Length: 216
Image (cartoon, rainbow, N blue to C red):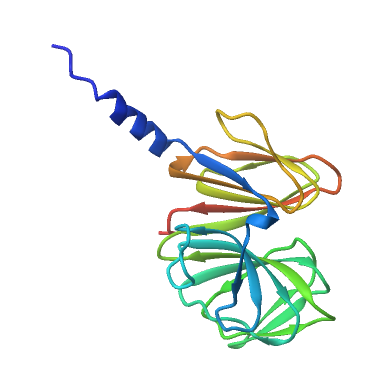
């Protein structure tokens, strides 16, 4: 006896859920939002779930301009990664620890609940900010420059072309070009096998947030 097959509509719905979705965002698509502590503004690139506020995101990627010294916002239960994009950097100090952000495109990671004050080294900075809520997701930051990089399996990727253009390869799709200051966001309901990112010029630098299930 031949087993009954799922209705075609149900199979198509399942395939849509399992297939990765992707979109390329231009700077005009980023959302301007106030900092949690009200001390400035940030450009939110992507957040999961879409439209989530600062108390309910699983992960969030943004860019902030820091123009003066002051306290950093507190994000209990969140791991934060900062990458200096422009400026001479800063020192974050407090809770008996110090975090130095001095060199462009070198990620630094710290706990979001740490009470830290920011002291700018010499003038304003512009920084890439990746946040992951530990109970809901895990994440790592990869800097792609000089040569192509194969990213590990993940449930989401956020690839920001910090300078120059990069090309991203996702299984089953033609190459995706990401222009300078644009962002490729790839999400899926199940882990993807990987993403390849290739800088297309000597000046190209891509920052890729790799997001997976919560750490065990």
